[in-house]
Amino acid sequence: MGVRILESTDGYKCLYDSVTMTAFGPIFYEKHDVLDFLEWLTVDARTLTSEQLADKQVEYDEFQEEEVSDCCCALPRGNGDNDSKDYGICPDCGDHCSYIQRKEAI
Image (tube, rainbow, N blue to C red; front, side, top):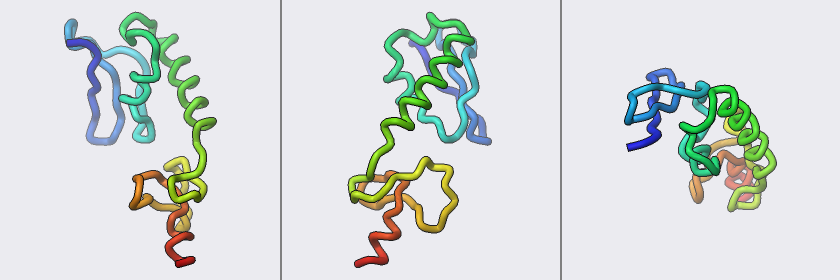
């Protein structure tokens, strides 16, 4: 029992408390990995207000952007929103990167 994730058919997600059966906090979009967010969060999400959770979500997004580096194939990673034909899912690690460039270079 504790914090769980609800996901809509549209890809939106929210947190809910499985003890009180109450949804709380901000809406997470398809690009968000809510499980990673909860692991990154150093406190129980239920102890924060909706505003504090929204602030933490922004802080986490900034942390994720800083953490974005090269993929395992040493090519730039995308942010998942890049519609460029040069980006795709790396078959080696699953990152959204420019592996297509590597594939064409072989």
